[in-house]
Length: 150
Length: 150
DNA sequence: AATTGACTGTTATAGCATAACGAACCAAGA
DNA sequence: TCTTGGTTCGTTATGCTATAACAGTCAATT
Ligand SMILES: [Zn+2]
Ligand SMILES: [Zn+2]
Ligand SMILES: [Zn+2]
Ligand SMILES: [Zn+2]
Image (cartoon, rainbow over all chains, first blue to last red; front, side):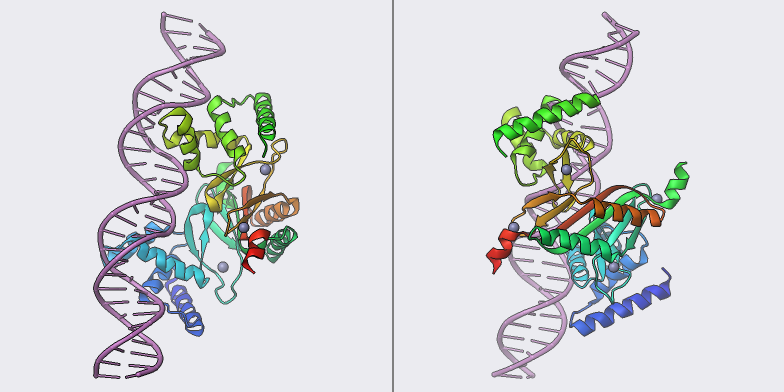
């Protein structure tokens, strides 16, 4: 992502928060910026290390609270099988999401397929479950690592 | 699960391992027994605590290695969003699986829908990803907790 | 007997996440 | 303006999950 694209994403996030009455504080904005700046999912402690470069000594709760806010406002997603966080590619339209994750290089792609979301929701309904959140992650090899292996 | 059902499951696991040339050692068998005995997913450290009651002081690697074996032989599944392990309900037919997990009481149900598996695999193929493993977990409220809430 | 490989025990450490408390900040009403 | 109450953030401590590294054990093979 270019610097300009990051700025644009931050502005849009700021606007969305304003509309919702949520406060994208400097800290939260900075964490979002760090996540946007990485094309790979980023771990909480990696973010913490970056934060410390600018703000001195901070503890884990500081970054976890910021992450909690960003997740609640659907500005980022958590990749469960990597314990890492990635910027959402379409914050204007809150959604369930799926991920393709490469076991070799860690490349992670956010995809969005509504059919799979509906099927899983229906599977829940059929059993009386009220599905609130879906975790759908496919692990394997990305195109680049596939061809490198052969 | 009744004691008889557990014995039956253990015997079947033993047989499957024998056919495969895999060794279901006393330790591994014991860990599987503990997992079978619980109707909820069990954490590694909880298993470790149980093991220690019979075998004295043991370290985490002991139980994690047993879990690794059981996972590799598809006798158990890992519930990623709970960091816990659950016995597979159909070890004779290795499969991808999905889980419904109650955020309130932790009840976890293994379900199996081939359509959703195929769709996710195709989503990967369409992007050049070779999907090796699928993590599909729906979190929400089970029927019991739903009615208790109202 | 010596060798090999698989399994297990043991200690230490790494990585991920939250509890609890207090200070600082901010918005809104008296 | 001053108070008040809620939100955010800093700080320390702790808990939970997982693995690295190395040593001992055992059985099968040579
Ligand atoms: Zn998204
Ligand atoms: Zn890759
Ligand atoms: Zn199963
Ligand atoms: Zn429940």
